[in-house]
Image (cartoon, rainbow, N blue to C red; front, side, top):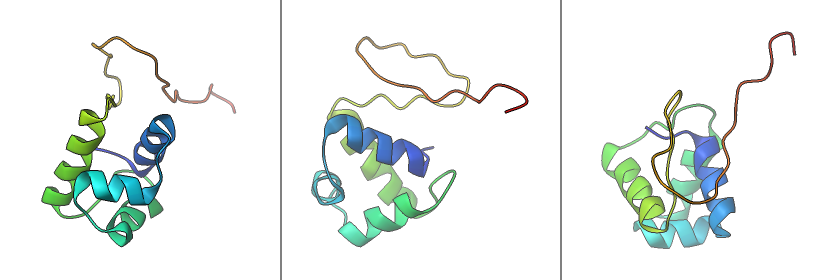
Amino acid sequence: MITSAQMRAARALLGIDQKALADLSGLSVPTIQRMESGTGTVRGVVDSLTKVVAALESAGIELIGERMTSTAQGRGVRLRSPPRGS
């Protein structure tokens, strides 16, 4: 659904801190911290994940899944796999 790296990158693109994301999503700062502290896909309560995704999307973030194309317009970044042998 969303990775911890995507959450951190989305906040960076928006220029907001964890408290601001907590406020936008209606969650606590420790919940946001816990979600962002791991690696890979964020695990947790589905309702909390849904709130974070909705908050990011309403702020203008488009979350792009693995091997998915972007259908929206605007600027953004995407992390690609490193070249083989690296």
